[in-house]
Length: 368
Length: 252
Image 1 (cartoon, rainbow over the protein chains, first blue to last red):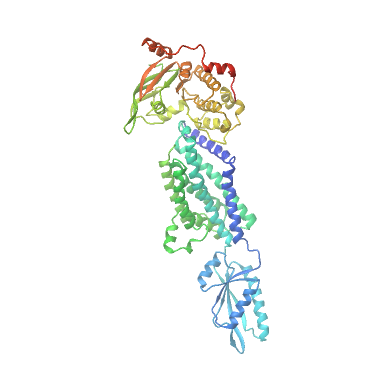
Image 2 (image 1 turned 45 degrees about the horizontal axis):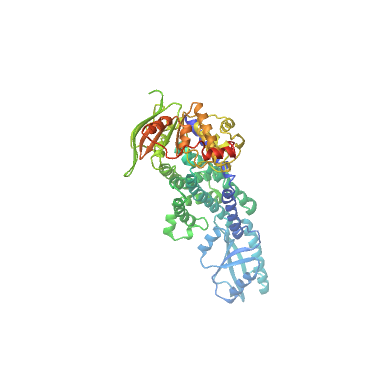
C-alpha cells in the first residue's frame, strides 16, 4: 500500500472521530461548555471595568491628620476604590496586570503648613499607554484638590497634582485571564480528554479490532491527534469569541501569530495525552498519571495567577513545565502585541517538549 | 501442496512455564470451512492469533497464502478477515461509517449497501452498532471482516450466545461466504455447529491436535473403536421441537 492510501485512511478515521465526538453530549459539554462556564465565572469576577471607579493603590507616606482626612475622603467617595499599600514596586506590578488603574503616592510632607495653609504634591502613576485614564483621573483629582484649595483661598494653588506615566503591559484582568483559560483548556482536553479516551477505547476493544487490519500504530496516533486538533481549535475559537463578545477582549497581537502558536501548542500538548493514553491499558492506569502531570501544570504554569507571585525556586522549575511557555507565549501575543517570531523562546521550549513526547508516545503505544 | 492456503509447521507458544501451543502441524485447504474445536484453555484462540499475525510464535512457521506470517505480518493482515468474540466497534458510529472507515484502512472502494445486503443489514446502514441485536452484531462483524475481500475469514465462536434461529441463519451466511470462494477458519464449542458447517475439523486439547478429519470420518472412527451411545437415539431433538414451534424465521 502506498503512503497516499495510508494518509487517506488517517483522514477518514479523523473525520469519523470528529463526527462521533459531535454525537456525544457529555464530550461536547466538557469541551465547549465547561471552559465557557469557567470563563463566565472568572470573567464575571474580574470582568470588564465599565464602571467609573478608579481602582487606586494608595501609598500614604504622610503622618498627619490632614493627610488622614484626605485619604478618608477619598475612601468615602464612590469614584475611588482605595487599596492602601506600602511598596511602590508591588503596586506597579499589580497595575501591570490590570488590578489597579492608578497608584497614588502621598509624600511625607503632604499637608504640612506652608504660609498658614496645608500644602504638598500628590503623585499619581498610571499606565503610559492609557491616555484616557490620565485625563479622566487628572480632571477628577484636580477638581477635588481645587475644592479643598478654595477653602484656604490662595492665588497660588498650594495643592496640585502631577501625573506621571509608568510603563506596564496595560492589561485588563480579563485579558490576562483569557490566555490562561485557553492554555488550561488545551491542557485539560489533552490530558483529561485524550489520556482517558484512549484507554476507554482499548477497553471496549475498538483498537484490538483495528490492529487486525493493515492499520499501523502511527496511523491511529495521527488520526487521533488530527481529530483532537480540530476539536481543540474549535474550542479555542469559541473561548476567544465569547471573550470578545461578552467580555470586550482586545487582541493586541496579530491573529496569524495567535493561530500558529495555538496550533503548535495543541499539537505538543496532545503528545502528553497520546503518551499517557497510548500507554495505559485502562482508565485506572491513566487517571493517576494524568493527575500527576496535569495538577502541577495547572497550579504552577500561571493559569490562574502569575508565576512571578511564586517563590523564586518554584518559578525556575515551573518555567520549564510544558504549559508555562504555552501560556506565556499566548499572553505575549494576545496582550503585548508580540509575533510568533518574537516568542521564539516559547515556541522552542514547546517544540522540544513536543518532539520528546511524541517520540515517547509512539514507542510506548499499546493496542490493548 | 499448492492447494493448501494455510500451512502450519511445529508451532509453539509458552507463557512462562505454561505450554499453550505444543508443536502444532496442520494445513487448511483452499475454499474449505475448517473447524478448530476444543475445551477452554486448549490453545484455540492463541493458535488463531498467531496465524492472524497478532501474536508472535515462540517457534515454528506459518505460511498463509504462501506468505510467511512472521516475516510479513502486514501482508497477511491485508488478505485476512477477522471476527472477534466480542463486538469491537465504536459506539455512536453508524454501520455505514464503520464500513467506510475499514474500506479506507485497506485502501479499497466498497459498495457499502451491497456488503450490508449480503449480511441482511441493508436497512440498518444508518443505525449505530449498539442498537443491533446479538445476531445482527455478529453478522455486521462478519461484514466488516469481508471489507477487504479476504482470502481467509477467521471466526472466533461466532454463534455463542445466539438464539437457535440466529445460529441457523448465521450458518447459512457462513456457507454462502465459503461458496463465494473464501476459506473459513472457525472455532466453536458447539458440536452440532461443527458437524453441520465444517468440511474438516481439528480437535485440540492441551495445546496439541488430537484428531483431524472430516466429521463423518471422525464419527466412523469412534464407532469403529466400539463406541456405543448409552441413550436411545431420538428421532428429533428438543431444538427440533423449538424450531418447529417457533419457526425458522429470524426474530430481530
